[in-house]
Image (cartoon, rainbow, N blue to C red):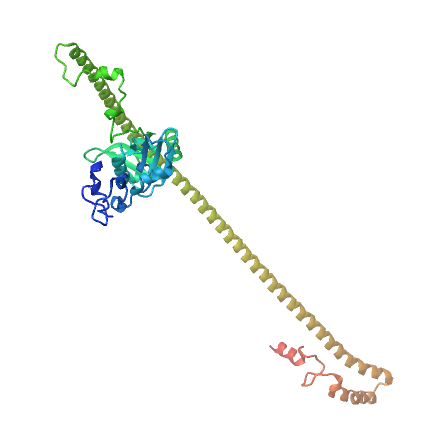
Length: 438
């Protein structure tokens, strides 16, 4: 059934009606018998959704309860039935020899309600003891930076393992105190974070002050030391003979009480002096750090300038080498072009020379042939004269008669056109006359 969402901050034993409802009268209108009411948690239900915050992690170490003074023979099933109305438990452990156990509920608020209702509850004839179990995977963080938040703290420690809770402690005005709490889901993760942070210097922000990590001291701030838990021995009765009072001036108690006050005042002054010295040392270290940071930045700028100069010089060298390569390539191209032009010129000259030599050879051969043919015609007439053996008019007429058809016919290989007796291309008698006239 739905729980009352009104005054949820009171979790006393007598206020169960605000969260739970018992069954009504029987079907016959009468109240159930006493034997039916032996279990106070019977027929009670609980609206667990009413006690869950949005985004809240469930089944954490903070919702783990210690149950002590258990009767002999109690099992995990018995303990689970005892806490059944508070939801499903994720962890139940019982040490039967020593009579205690642990149980983990869904949320912290549900665990608080269960602790408030079941502490001193009589279970099988024995009042059980219910309180929150100590968190074995919790760490205390000090020297936190000014601008560190819960989210940053959780992000910083998540590298060591799964974090259940990370809180930066603030004062009553909401200002950070430089302290925090980190709770892991497992002890190995907490041990790893503790060892890593103690061996090295873990920084959370740009401010180079490392944080300090220590195992968290567990305090029972909910109940404290009750009267029933004090060992009532002989010393207890001796100390409790006198009630609370103010010491009377001039008495033995007053004298030593004032001496104790002076000692405590001196202790307070010593702590203040130590705090003041620590603050001065911190301010001095911060000033030195700023000066060193400035010098370091100047050194980095100088190194960066030298690096850029070196890069510029190297780039200039590369550029000069590239220019030299280009010039050499251009010179090689120019030499190649000149060589090709020279080769082409020599080839042209060689071809012209060959053409001229070929022309002269053909001209001389043609001229020799023509001269031989010309001389061969005259030699034939001379041979005929010599064969006849006679000289005179008859022979001359015969020679003229014989030579006439030879000179006129083309079979004698004589040129036609008035240049008989001279080869083509050679100057004739008329040309020589022209040249003489000229």
